[in-house]
Length: 219
Image (cartoon, rainbow, N blue to C red):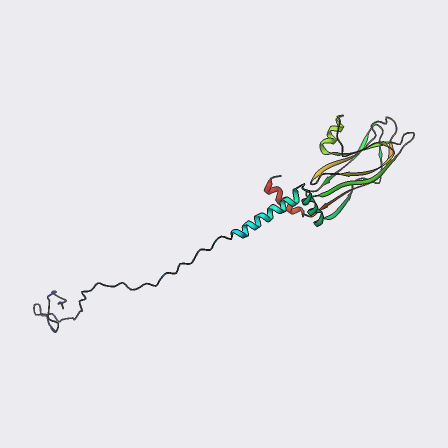
């Protein structure tokens, strides 16, 4: 052992330092290497794998919904028909007058997501000595073209008749249309018209869903 004062090497049984006389404090000198305290083993938690299958399923579901709502494929249209509810909206007044050398029109809109869209109804005209009108079903652009005096390709053209029945199919989806009662060919005689014409369509998507789609796809 060593003296704590002068570091003199002393016998193991010494009580005082033989060199400096300092009282001996016994210390044990260890010649072996010191060992570090054992540390607890660290548990490594496995990382969670991303739920790829769930995200893939959701993506495929969104694609399927978009396809069913927008595709003109026969299967998609049949699927929409199975899930849709019928809607109907009156387009015309019951009774109205179309002036001589003039025309009257009714503008109407088809909402987004509409399927099985068609216009149906009946009309009749009276006027002495003439009692004929000509009824057109036109798109927004065709209406402007017709007013400017150019040829058009209408969805419905009655020809000059005193009465008629309308049944015209329209495209799937949103659109703006005009039902025109034309009396331009009569220079002097106004026509009294009785009409009962209705827009029919089916839709199975709420309006808010189409607003979201428009924002996402910018259409």
